[in-house]
Image 1 (tube, one colour):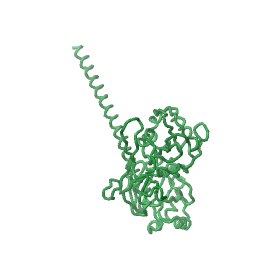
Image 2: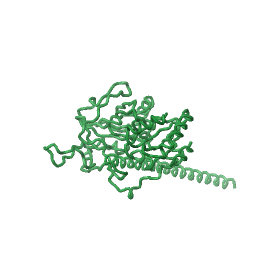
Image 3: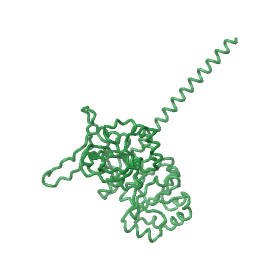
Image 4: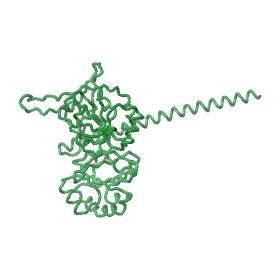
Length: 381
């Protein structure tokens, strides 16, 4: 009888162990699924942004588009930044052979997930990270992940804006002459793929030799540089009608990580959403010609002044720059007014309307569903 009891206990513990292992596997798979979903969400957000850039260029209403960033063949914008050891590096420091310039941030979850992969690079082609954030945290990331690449810390966002990059991670291949040699890569996989890509030459259009060619690349193909004959197609975002798009158009829901952006204020100073981590942010989308936006302005000023120690109001406005400046002065806005030229940031947040607002918590997560109209916006906080 005693032996039967021992056997029953052993079987019970084996079953408990098996169940625990099965639970562990399920949790692990669930975590991987969540990470995949986050990456997919990020790609949709970036796709949304690129659609807005097409509207900006054409001066049209939002419609699908692809975005190539800086044209292939144009000179890469100059930079002079210190690396983690305090040595100044410039574009000239990397001339002579192709290298990858990648824009990174220590507060970007997608960047942090690619950190181990950066450490596994073979170093055949230089990877230069131009990053924003805390130097000590970057030193820890470099040591932990055995980075062999240069990390240049940008105090502001001048270089990032010069390369027409508004989200991280993003990057370009630059050839040995210091020219842009790829279309803009968006996302960790696309950026790391540049390490094996062959430099592109500007596509010659009709009129070569008579000065009429524009030098822009119309395709997105990058020839793989690993010795194979395969051709890797870049992440081009093809033109689509609004009706065919799967982009969110009724506002990102509560619980979503607020997409980062970099925009100039009316004085030309760059602001990024990540600069305001640690403080709640009321992100208000406005338009200089929007009547309800103007009617809300006095109460928005009072709200910003009353809760300024715990809440940062940021306004993203559309319309003429001078008209926006006059309006800001007339109402005495105590908060930054950032200007999107068309709908590029509105698309990131999935709603084309003014006035609307999102309340973002201290960790950069949307705290409540979008508020549309003056009263709901003021009631968010």
